[in-house]
Image (cartoon, rainbow, N blue to C red; front, side, top):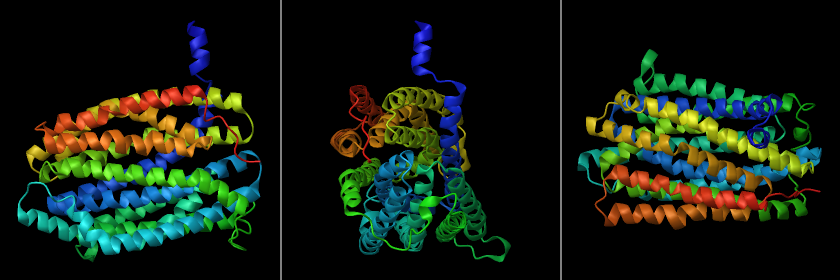
Amino acid sequence: MLHRLKKRYIGDKAFYRMALAIAVPIMIQNGISNFVSMLDNIMVGRVGTEQMTGVAIVNQLIFVFNLMIFGAVSGAGIFGAQFFGNGDYKGVRDTFRFKLISCAVLTIAGILVFLFLGDKLIWLYLQGEGSPEEIEASFGYAKQYLQIMLAGFVPFFISQCYSATLRETGETMLPMKSGIAAVFVNMCFNALLIFGLLGFPKMGAAGAAVATVISRFVEAGIVIAATHRNKEKYRFIEGAYKSLRVPKELVAGILQKGVPLLLNETLWAGSMAVLNQCYSVRGYDVVSAVNIASTITNVFNVSFIAMGSAIGIIIGQMLGGGRTEEAVDANRKLTVFSIVFCLLFGVALMGVAPFFPRIYEAGQSIRDMAAKFIRVAAFCMPLGAFANACYFTLRSGGKTFVTVLFDSCYAWVVVVPLAYCLSRFTGMPIVPLYLCCQLVEIGKCIIGFVMIKSGIWIQKIVA
């Protein structure tokens, strides 16, 4: 019995080496990026709570745009991974072109939205209790920060198109290296421009924005240059710009599979923005506490995010190569591995909960509230790991419409209404309210288990 369970749910050393070879570089890149974002947040927080709150609000809004880009590259990436698994480099090249075109359109739209509606969106997060002076100051810092950050949208989408395609072909080291370089640049300029070190102007929150924009250009420059220097290795890039033509059949296929994914990422990010807005109506202090908590939890969440990406790439390549039985077995073992992995990260996050908020120049009530939020997030991390594994499994087989129902629809139909009602129509304290909104992930996990068990995701979508 024990031997049978071990064989069913646990792989051998070679299996985990293969999985970690993909997951670890993604984890390192995302982890370092989130770590520097955390340092960025801490540095701005040392300057003042108002500046930290302004930056947090804008980053929540930009998060929606970032996931739109992620959804666009991921929709085409389903085909890219399967084309590569099938040995079709022309197909990979065509999906890369589609990514560039679609992301350029989305970037223009995103910039226009923030230029004309940015002020109104920022004010939505400043409706809770707080002094008028604090609220007005946070709005000013947020507006200034947003205007600078718009300059980094173009290099961001270009680097995402390159990095995503490289990962789909099994190359995770180059995106990781470019990400690390960008992070180092961001960290250095953060220190120089936020605090005005070595003769640089002391810009506070605006300095953090400038540093981020510079790092975006550095990341894009490195990944573009390295890819084009090694055309023999990265064969999809050879002739990629001779034409921007994408076969109509592929466009139709990507739109059919990719638009639901783009819609899902956008709606899900929007639901998280609305969720945080629901928390914010409980007061100005809650906005600061949620920001402090999310800063550290984002660093630890890279564990299941990277494992989910690895599941999507590995299972997608197996399905593209027609190895369906191997894909089913690998998916089961990778999901178990992801949950166990995140249990360890959750324990570590629980351990840092009492200490991390003390770094900030914030009131004691804000620090205590943030510590409680961190403990809740740590407790619920395994639920996120399982739901994320289900999401990427469904996506690897091209079941993108199903992922919309599973992911963003669940958030809008269950999580957001719950948060809205509890925050506005009850006197429930904010921490139990926050816990309730996290625990509804259990329902999503049950739905995911049923869908994965049914095998609806097992399909090859490329010729």
